[in-house]
Image (cartoon, rainbow, N blue to C red; front, side, top):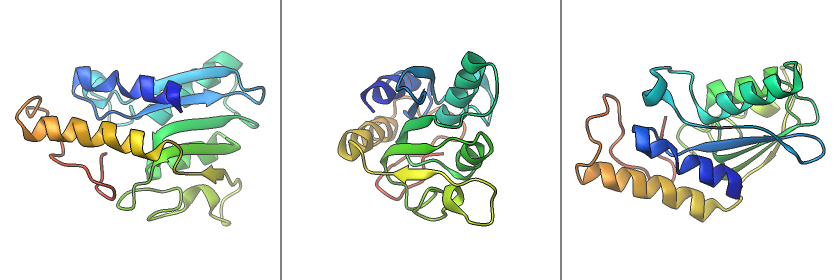
Length: 164
């Protein structure tokens, strides 16, 4: 999670919400990492999780990430949860819960939906206070006027507020 927090800290420089993710292989080695880059890349799918999954798949040379763990600072949204299922990731470990938009147990539970062909183990709340504080600080800065020009920037974050 500390590595994911480092990545999350890079996102605000481009106006992106501070979310970071790392994919670990079955042996614990880092295979890929990413941080939110929607604003930087002009890409609505450039969430930290998706970018980390893409990097891990490139490192392995295939899309199946069985045995891998995705570590992310915020509970995945529906899009990212779906990507975890499709990539056959074994486990997701996340920091802050998102009871407004989370899809790994809060609002939805996409990753453990028995109707799908794969289910992901979920470990939530790891370094939750640190992960949440990074988000709170980012949005407090936006409320104070810094970086408020991002076209679809939220103005606040509290546990339960959507960040995506």
